Image (tube, rainbow, N blue to C red; front, side, top):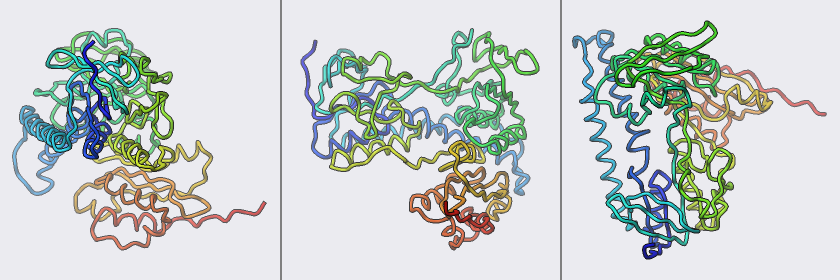
Length: 469
């Protein structure tokens, strides 16, 4: 074994939580090393959040081009140049990577490119990408291992060499007919983008609705959107086997209530969930225990079962969003500085970046009913928002849940133009524990989407007074 190198801080993985931990610790004067296998900065700037939104924006431009006559423009028939789409995306990614490298240099944290495996408590052996190995020990260790896409155990599926989001976001060509397995946010975002670029698209979802955890009105609105854009959606459909090779020709054997049939296409994209990157890490050598799903066991302070070892982000079972990983970093950072923060009762928003977006913060009706929480509903179509009319983007709806016995906002769902920004307004009110009336009576700029909140909340049913026992 190589000579052991000692650091005050050792971080495995340079994703959102890992990189901010590295930069913060190094700037504070701690000798810091972060080991990264491949993606400097993690998935978000390289192969996930930011590249996908970059490509989705190109698809939005393609959609605008096809609607040009609606806006009084004559531009002919647009044609997608996927090589051009990728040039724009790759330039953004290259710029982001350089920005990360600059921050590592400025902070003083050492970035070690290689694959780490634990060989003892708080000690890893790193197989360097450039060749050779190093053994690194840390007084404090932070695990930011991330997750990867899962390929379901379906006969012939793995042999067909399907794409995950990683390969789909790097295509220099346009699939003739893309078959997407999975009706969650990854599958939906990429399905719509590829359709707008010009591919035929079929979505196969085993559940009875798209976005299984959302209310039926939200799922139904997405289904209507996809069918309007001529995306074929098959719900409650099981895949029995797959034949062929993705990128050439595939045959997907499926079964639903009507019987069995074959879906033929040229490419297949699997978007059915993720699994933690904990296998083969030697975590047992470090005294770090896993749960039954393979995620690292942590308490509410993100401490593992090993002393002076923390796990952050998706590998710790945190909700799979970059903004949650960043908050994991803040929790650990603040606690190391004498704070007492935990992951309990965090108000976590999310957004599916279809066009229009579907965004939610807090409870939806399904969750409220499941918890036995009484609520009032304020709902209206996006077409009632004047800003949406000016943009010719009137598809969708707004819905707020308000406690039956108080004016507390329980949750907000919006499907429509600028949904993520509108959701942030409501989230801010919820964080400040403002009653819904504060938004109802606010003066918002005209015409903005946020102004729609005053219309939405103008006629909320009166709250009920609890009867004495």
